[in-house]
Image (cartoon, rainbow, N blue to C red):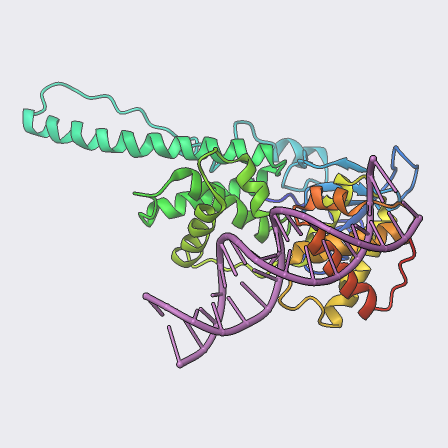
Length: 318
DNA sequence: AAGACGAAAGTGGTTGA
DNA sequence: TCAACAACTTTCGTCTT
């Protein structure tokens, strides 16, 4: 299924931009159950609904229940409604399977050839099924929405068509694919987070190798991650409010303008910006707490935060 | 005692000859 | 292929609250 497009008669309903600019790609709906604020942000790109005021993440895994078509009266509704499962890339034969029965009377040679062929088909098929279930399992553990799972599955299918799978570890490939699709969708997960939920024997190094390999062979491009993309998730993991989230984004934007982010790791920047924003707002989080959530060390947070506060002339009084 | 700080050495990846 | 290099980590002693 595609990213849903709902009735767009109400204006402002569908300005959907790239996730690069954080303001675009979002639409306002109403009612935060926590603070009563009217400014909820629904972001299909990031698959989150959150409150812009208190930062409560209402849903991290929204699936738009609406149909992808539009109907203006009940007649159209009944005409356009369909039944049956949607076609999905996550089922190994796209959900359209055909059962081949064999008939007697075939020559013995042909039969053997067929047996061999189906044997090969079965083993590759089996690994394919396993790969898809792995993608599903990991995506689930990473709290990723269905459209990202679909995209990853589709890429795996593509890789198979290009015969890129043979001789490589499925776990490494699927991990790398998820890592790639997350970045493409503007909801980056850190490499460490992906490694954590993949099967034990896979190391970061292997995932990274598969990642580079797939980018090259499938001719994919991922733009460098903006620290901003990490902010909402890290903030919600730290139970920080929406004020702090926007303050952190603000800091990152200024830092980018001042070219303080060049050559630095985006996660470290995000971590430091959040650390500063939290202090400024009186909701102090220790360097350790931020470090645990972001996966960068306290030392790096310190270094980034020193640079940012000095160069941007932010007074951080503890 | 916990948090913040910073020096120094180590690690893994990138780059350019 | 190798060495230089930058970013980041690990470790640890010291200072601050």
